[in-house]
Image (cartoon, rainbow, N blue to C red; front, side):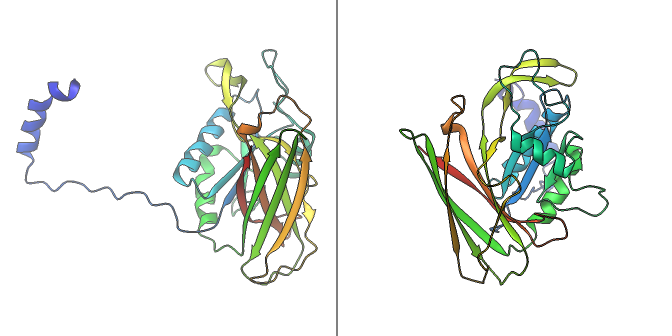
Length: 274
């Protein structure tokens, strides 16, 4: 073993530096908050830099496993299936989101649908610039919390979804509930920078469909502090290629800002029980 081979050399180094205090690296601690930041990534199978965006989301979810919800939206430029593709990862609602938010610049991502200082658009181009906005959003005190449950009935091929919204203060304005279905572990072709076509690339957080209207469903109920409101939906799965065991429900409340359906107040990722 390498460790055994170098043990004598290491011992000499330790002896010669025994008077130096060891550098202590503090353990990373995720924030203690119920805030879940929503990352909506605009991506495509023919976008050679988009795998870098996927890796950045993976890194962020690793740092904040309970505080990140992600949706990968395939639509617009560079998203048409390749000759080597087995699947078309686009969906109608995804195309509408691309048109509404200007998601043709890829890779780009909306962080809680907030327009940050210094950015010309809500989607932030370049995955190297996503970290700080995520941290900034995590520092915000949530004004609503969300939770819920989702159950799949294989006999009827339906997903029953319940989303509960818990206002933490009185909220005035127009708000919408958005519910998306995503799928992980889809293996298909992706064009990768300096590599070319990778036929067994793994796609995650892929938007399959929106259960609500593509632009959200209006919340008609008053959002009053400590008065929870619940919403129930049934969704029929018609696509035989979807693997329910790899799917999630992403629910989020948005609105109250200058832009329609912006910003996102809070989000939740819900497992689908089989």
